Image 1: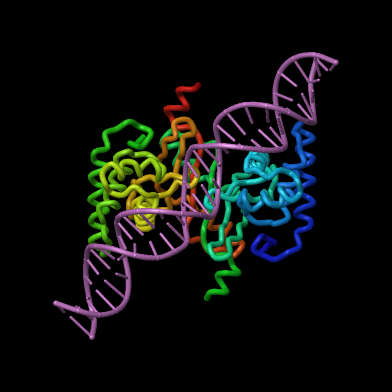
Image 2: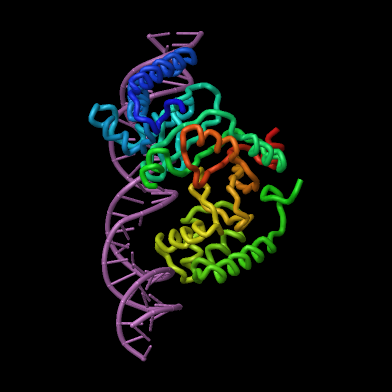
Length: 158
Length: 158
DNA sequence: GGGTATGTGTTATATTATATCAACATCAAA
DNA sequence: TTTGATGTTGATATAATATAACACATACCC
């Protein structure tokens, strides 16, 4: 079993490499990686969990980076649009991408008990593609979110 | 290509069979299929599309079935819990199940252009199960929602 | 340097959802 | 047939999530 979000681990490196990767991508693509955007990504990377917009906003406010909802939503829009962050629809929450720009269809495992979320990689959508073809539907993006119990909570409760 | 929500079709039968099926299920399981619950399912079946709670509420209000949000949310909770209705997380909307109690992992195709939603059947989760096993996660339910273009809108725009 | 596009600050509001508590209904056991 | 357990509804209030609209500032490009 490889390291994942259900483990406890030091993810200083997660933050560092995530920021570097975003930085590089923005430079290469002529995107403005402004202080608000930078800080929001940094918070999401360092918390290493799914956070609501209103969980992030107070931190920005403390740091003088904006205290109204539109500030955080605009930053999140940018980060989601460019693949640095994903929205977890089931939770109305946002989480830093752990496989930036690997051209993946992100899928999430959401623990009901502890609310931790892990992003998995890989091709999930073969069956879905088939279903779509049957009705002539063209898939552009997919939301794939599994709800259940993570190893920690599962074993704890048995 | 079989009949589906992207076709225009007379779905009088969808409504009738949906209601009958729910009715039977409730009797068999000792559930109270009360007027509010009945009417909400009927509305969702007859509109044959994903609707927000606040789209449904005015109709209930007109008919004297309750005008406060908790009324509709409680009815929706009941209908979702027992599999008559699904929530489309991506849209924060609700849609009548078209395969009631076939023990399926519901998956949706959501058209970006016309907002129509089609529920597909079938086993979608093989790859996801594998990913979950790798981290020791136990899946209880899955949200699978594809966003894209339906045949009508796709051809219209080309 | 001037013009255009993009990003930010701010106010206000829209949309989606839940907590709480009292009243009433249903049903089965005492 | 009362009692009590459970479930449903009615009503008020509020929480949580998200966007519209507009003025101003900054970045970028020629």
